Amino acid sequence: MPRPHRRLASTCIGTVTAGLLATGAALAAPEKEQPKGSDIAMGAFLDSGPPGVDRIPRLSRWLGGKEIRVGHTYLPGDRWARIEGPDFLEPWARWRRAKENRLFVLNVPMQERNEDHVPDRQVAQLIRAGAEGEFDHHFQRLAEKLVELNLPDTVIVLGWEMNGATYTHRCAPDPEGWKEYWRRIVNTMRSVPGQDFKFDFAPNRGSDAIGWTRCYPGDDVVDVIGMDSYDQAPGRTFDEMVSQPYGLQQHVDFAKAHGKAISYPEWGLFRHGDNPEYVQRMLKWIAQHRPLYHTITDYCPHGVWQCKQNPRSAKAFRAALAPERPGPVIPTPVVPTPVIPTPVVPTPVVPTPVVPTPVVPTPQIPAPEVPVPSPAVPSPDVPVVPVVPSTSPGHLPDPVPEPVPSPAVPSPEVPATDPVPVTPEPVEPSPQVPAPESPSPEPVPEPVPSPAVPSPQTPASPSPDPLPVPVPSPLVPGPVVPEPEPVEPPANSTEWCVPINFGEWLSKLVGKQSVCVKINWGKDSGFWPW
Image (cartoon, rainbow, N blue to C red; front, side, top):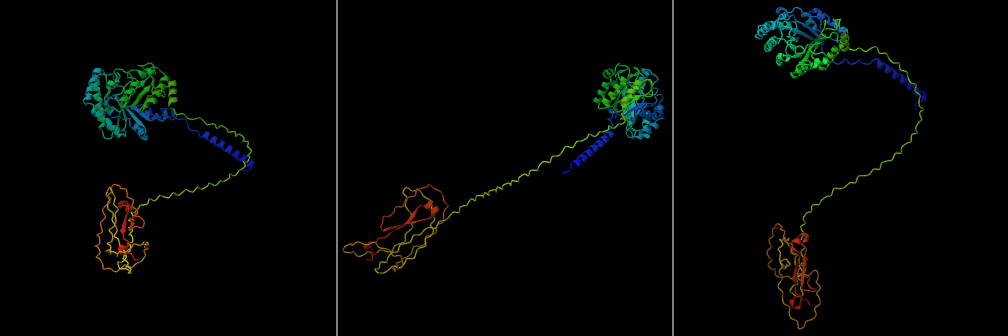
């Protein structure tokens, strides 16, 4: 048993070790989880040309290292030559190829002179011309340019805010013709080898000049359903922006019904000035519905970084998107609690008596053997034939050899009213010679038979032919007939009967049998020797 002072030293060492481990665990505390929605692809429109690319890292640093995954720019809508062959996309292509998880979003107008306030009648004529294929070659050259720049997976926001009244590529003057024109552009650009474009249908929030659902060209030519939503009417509060006709909720529901992803290519402040509540509510809505991407329009009056007139909204924007960094961890000093050793009282060890377990032998139960009885064929008892004395007086008869009986074969029992005992066929006796008559009868003493008396030599009598051996027939059980009891002959009778034992089995078939011989021992019989 260890000594008490050694136990106290071991306890103190263990306490100090545990304190050091706890301090190390506090220093290595994991960072807090990223805010919800921080993994959604996010970007901002900072400029159309190379300055827009250069400002992306600066925006990322302003947001505390937030990764900017979306680069967003616009093609000029003044002339077809600048739409089909832009000369400022090379910097955007290099930025896109730098990381695999980045998205390049490009707004493409459907008409030249896109912001020249062209009247509806002329817009309708341009729509019909486009639907007939007059402008297909411009979009084919643009598609080839994007593939050549290694931008085949560009997200193309084609004819954005078509439900409004601002752009020449608006839908209201001829909705059906406009949808056909959209389909021709998409099919033309998809026909270029190597392309993998995604086409984003992005109306304004609200009804504006026309309900945007009337301009939807079909699921086969749309990959993403976006929405531009600024802090302006229709809707005074964010809740009204959600619930109004053609608002944020209807946009989400419509995209879900058509199996499309959603996006917010443009959003930001506008009519209501510096409105941090709108910024917070919009970012929460985005985090809840998880679009493919979203980009804030970051120039005045919409922006929060480059536009310095919205400081409260800028603070709300940074708080929602900047990744939280843990502050310096100050380790809490661990004060070891003195451990007072408890005196150890040895417990006496009482040996437990070992009680042997009695071994109970398992009784061996022999398997019962079922004997198979073999039918025993009894041998018939043949009675000894009594010796017949010779007819010649004074001459002892020769011994008669014992006949060998043939085995008796039982016959099936035949029911009879008076059973007659069956006797074997007696041996044919010799002819009896009458004895001379005596003048007076005298009492005759009982003869005592001698065991061996030679029989007289008499001429051989013909012996009967041997009986044929019967072939046993199959036993047919018949009615059981009670066996007659044999009648005992009276004492000193001249008829001797010897019972024949055929065995138990054969006796049941033929009954009890006996052989009887009747001999006359009188003086007149010729056998009386005196």
